[in-house]
Amino acid sequence: MPTVYRDGYIQALRIASRDQIFQTYCKIMDVAQAYTASVLWQDYSIARAKIESDRADNEPDEGLIIFNRVVRKLSLSVLAP
Image (tube, rainbow, N blue to C red):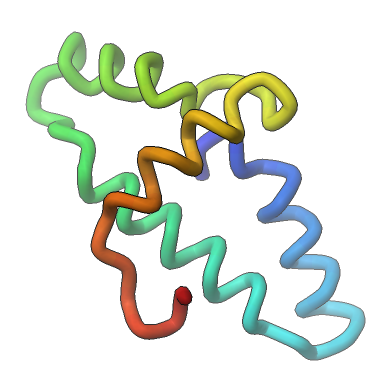
């Protein structure tokens, strides 16, 4: 899970556990999977540079705006709007 999405992930888990509503959890996981698939993991320096430039390693209040711009360009499943 990208650090920048940590708070949303934890909140989605709470909603799923307490209220049995899984839509937010599925969306968070879909975005995380799509982002992870977009990183070229074969070369550490390339992967690290992408993660840093996308602000995926930042705290949510520091990197969420930039990270959300990146994930809007990714292909998500039909679960995410």
